[in-house]
Length: 194
Ligand code: NAP
Image (cartoon, rainbow, N blue to C red; front, side, top):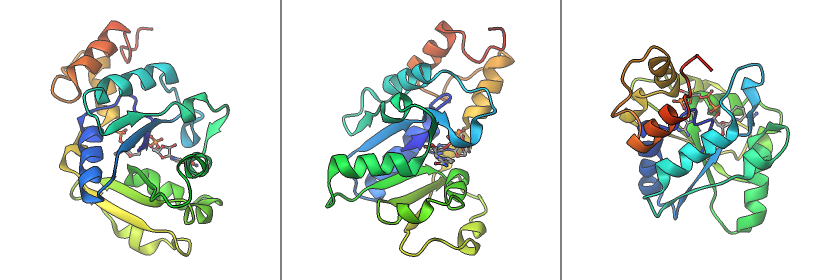
């Protein structure tokens, strides 16, 4: 499961659990991005914070793991490179899925390397109910590339909203795990004063 996770919240965790069950997965490997491809001009929280928050959020679930693969790889993060590495690690017979938000999946379909993904994995686009899925029908998908969609009501929660709430001192309780909220507070993330 790829994401910037800035910060990770219950929407991500519910989506991961939903994918685990719906697609009969052995485990979900959370993959915080190093330098997100479409955010090179935006301020993103240092990778080590995003990685640690992801570890904290997933620690109690034996089916969830967190990878440092992308945050330790120098340069801009490209999913096709990550999936190539995972394919080598897990072998040709493993069924690999790349789970992420639907907007990011639509973006992925526009890359020149997206055709290579067809040999590497199935994409799972997680959305909140009511999200307009028509672009998935209209966009030409590289031949052989499988794209699944999955509706997750908890994805009404968003990292952008959580960051804005922290910045304006509004509550974030019940939107993300308490231990992650404590980490955000202790490290003064998103307050706009650091
Ligand atoms: P984003 O633009 O921050 O997110 C787009 C939407 O998807 C937001 O609504 C976001 O909500 C949601 N989202 C993100 N990750 C999610 C997840 N794991 N589960 C459910 N919803 C999720 O997207 P991003 O974080 O930069 O990128 C997502 C993934 O796609 C990353 O792994 C990234 O490396 C990959 N990606 C790769 C390329 C490339 O290789 N060229 C380009 C774009 C994206 P929240 O803000 O609440 O998370």
